[in-house]
Length: 119
Figure 1 (spheres, rainbow, N blue to C red):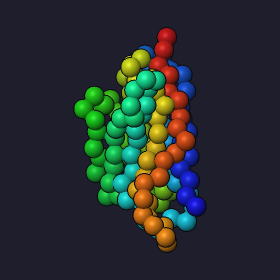
Figure 2: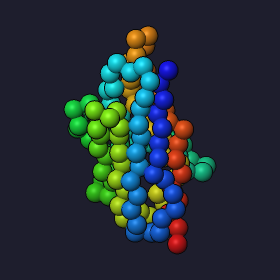
Figure 3: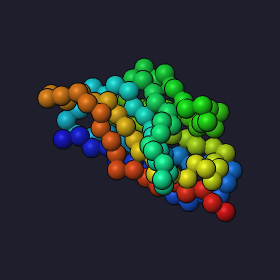
Figure 4: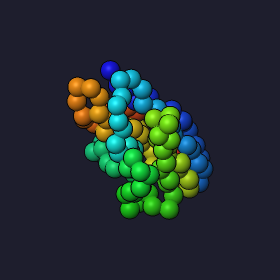
């Protein structure tokens, strides 16, 4: 059993910052890439950023320069630092991780954390 648990969402004013965390737990052998996706009402889920096990990040173009993804492999945790937030960043943010267990290797998803940017 593998779980991804996100935290850190909330309400923030435009121009503000938030830091999201996602901790993976369970019968994990290896965590490969980890990442963040988001889904706004009426929209499809979209990529925010990913990071390899070696720490190489990749960002969606609209997030470059404002968001920073990082990870702590010892803690099986991925972070998303979000700065200069805009109302358009309002969405449910989902953590994703490519995980190998004894039985399989597949992507896992967290339950999501709401981020609302509003004055």
